[in-house]
Amino acid sequence: MNFDDIKLPAGMAGNVDHVGIAVTNLDDAVKLYKGLLGLELDGVEEVPREKIRVAFLRLAKGSGIGHIELLEALDPDSNIGRFIAKKGPGLHHVAFAADDMTQALANCREAGIRLLNEEPVVGAHGKMVTFLHPKDTGGVLVEICSAEH
Image: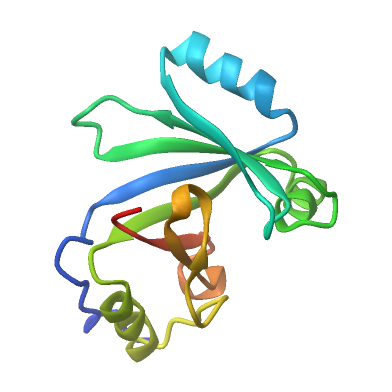
């Protein structure tokens, strides 16, 4: 795979939307991140399609990252449930916001990066999301999400 010719769409380079962290107990994790780090909770919601409950905690402006997303499995057979069973709680993914999702995914395909879901699906906060295969991204699960929700 040749990464020399990857073209990131305008508005995507360096724009980390959030870092996803798999947790076993969302309420306890929210208390930890709010108390220890002083982060502000933006909200908690369920994503029924993924069988998860998520909390978004806002990071300080200027950090280069918008949020920490805490992910709790509602079903042990969900992606997050299987991840925790295999690897334990911890870093799950890094999400980059794209102003133009169609162009971002076209650029990934052109570079030979496999998509875990060929078409974007609705994720937390109503954002459209697609994940890139970690075998093509240095072992890191990368999410591309729409910049707006």
